[in-house]
Structure formats: structure tokens, C-alpha cells
Amino acid sequence: MRLKRDKRLYRELFFSTLKLSACTFGGGYVIVPLMRKRFVEDFHWIDEREMLDLVSLSQSSPGPIAVNASLMIGYRIGGVAGALVTALGTVLPPLAIISVISMLYSQFRDNAFVSAAMRGMQAGVAAVICNVVVDMGRDVLKSDSGLSACLMTGVFTAVFFFKVNVLWVILACAGTGLIFGMIRARRAARGLGKIGSYAAHGTRP
Image (cartoon, rainbow, N blue to C red; front, side, top):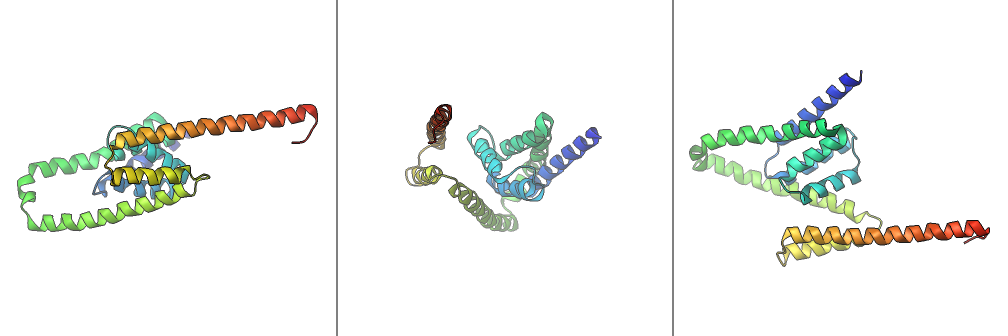
């Protein structure tokens, strides 16, 4: 029974990522809202916050964000086998399409209809990416502190206006989050220690 369930899960993972990858044009960022709708809203396999964390890790890791996100989502849902299945489903469509285009590149390059279609697709891709920014930014602003909002504003300023390398931005954000996480953990431990002390002496805080 479990074997059948696992096969069904892996089949769903493979065909979901295959369809998303086949219908995604304009870069890895475009696949993020499609994955979010599929795995968060439709299947409810992961929640919104976890999806945001997985996308952040995918962006911070070397390699294409679409493949990284597929690997992490697949691993989260189906383990190592799930990661392999989702990676395969994500890679196959662009591999096939690029192989065909590379053989017919000279015909595609000078075709006026193809150029017009690509310009239209670029406008659609820009709109989809803007939708990703708004949705993810809204989730960040809903966090329990102003740190995420400050980091988001600071990163946008650094990258857009001062052209700071994304690698340094990611490292700075990771270090800042680590420091604030340690501070919160110490405060929480200190608060628990005080409560324990009050309980031991039979007094109320």
C-alpha cells in the first residue's frame, strides 16, 4: 500500500514539475509562483512560510534557481527520490527545447514572427516576476519583526542603486539573520531561566 502511495507521489511530483518547466519562459524566477500555486495552494504539501524559506535557499545556492527550488521542494516532500524526480522533470523540457533551437538557430534568429513573439513573451514574463515580488514581499512584511522589512529595503537599495554584488548581499543578510537569531535565543533562554527561578522560590514574576 505504501509502495503504491509513494509511486503516486513521485509520479505527481514528476509530472507537476515537468508541466511547470515546459510552460515556463523567461528564467527561473517565473517558475516560483507556479510552484507556489501547485504545491502550496493546490496540494497543500508545504506551507507559505516554508515555500519562502526554500526559495531563499535556492537563490542563495549555486546553480539555476528553478532546478535548486525543484530539488529542495522534491526533497522536502519525497526525500532523495523526490529530489531526483523533480530535478528530472524540471530539466527535461528546457533540454529538449534548447536542443531543437540550437539545430535551427539560424532560422529562428532572423525570423520576424519569432522576434515579435519573444518581445510579447518578455512583457508577460516581466509581469509574472512583478507578481512574485509583490507576493513574496507581502509575506516578508507580515513577519513578526521589522528586521525582514529593513533587510528587504536595504538589499533593494544596495542592489538597485549601488549595484552591489548579490553574493555579498546574501552573505550580509545571512550574517545579520544569524546574529539576530542568536540574540533572540539568548533572550528566550534568559526569560525561561527567570520563570524557573520564580517557580523554584514560589514567587510570581
